[in-house]
Image 1 (cartoon, protein in one colour):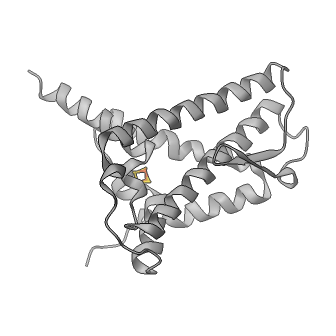
Image 2 (cartoon, helix red, strand yellow):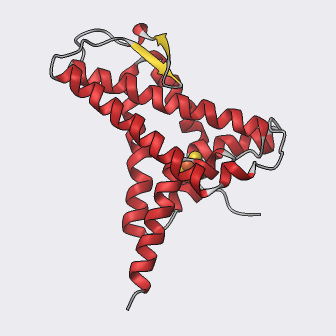
Length: 195
Ligand code: SF4
């Protein structure tokens, strides 16, 4: 049996992250670690060590789907693992991320005011005002928190839905972070093998 490491329990971090954001939205900024760390490992290490060992979300899907048997464990549909879908979803996700940054900029420039809501599936506005006291930080920093938490929660809910319907880690087949790190690793390894 494989020896357990501290990073095998990072699924707890996934739960703690959303719980913290339920009480104070500013904790959403901590999600940037999950955003930047896999990219840095891929860029400097040329591998997917983060996905294979450190991703709390992937571990959570595995735990719920495999160990707790919450998944139907059906084969992930072919279209979901196809290249066009993976890259299409990445493009969509990056566009939504860019829009979130743009909305943050609008608040920073004074063109828009801060709204204390999160947005699920990029459309459903959910009041989330109890998690923030106006004036604690600059409006743009709070706006980014609401936006980033929305993105993290939406992607986790999509991941949970596909976990229930298909294999526990079906989300990983089209996860934007996974697609990005895989592309970086491929490019990097190609570069290194070129004489
Ligand atoms: S593909 Fe995404 S969810 Fe899956 S392990 Fe990698 S970063 Fe985590």
